[in-house]
Length: 223
Image 1: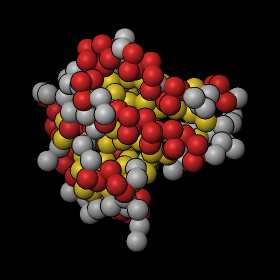
Image 2: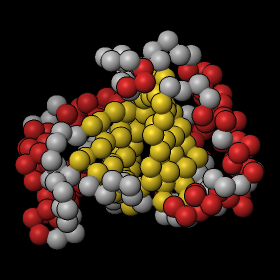
Image 3: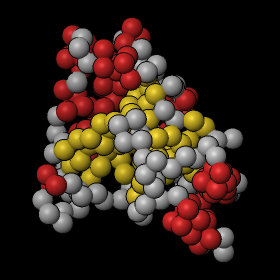
């Protein structure tokens, strides 16, 4: 049986593009509707990155990576892509897939929280993934014992595709671990960073990687 995957897409929109009105809204709604109706699409979330509002981030839960690849081979895929390129984005989309552990299906979903902290951690190609997976599992377990933090829903998984980062060396294809934590708002996350609990558990996230990026998105689910 194929494993479920989550497609992660970064869309670098035309500066100041308003997706709530006019032709841009029509193009964007067409994009979302096309994805949502594909066989194997289980859920679709999207939102603007708080720190970079012109970057829209999409998360697409697929039954399997083959379902996404099947969509890419359909006759309607090129018109779908042309709509995005011509009407919405300033530069080409960035896309990859992440596999989350199966047990997450019964856990709190960080993407349905008001704000989601997004974490990309980059590792050398020879890095043993089990090490950071173990650290993240421990981080997740400890975070669950801190309801006072306001965090709810902690997901993390490895990218199927290789990734480059300046700290890995020019042209080096390394590994990416993508983490997500749900928060009531950005302020709650910032407040937690000042606590002793944060200082105690954050080494579990920071040890081992060669580079890390952190930002926030207020996702909404497309039905």
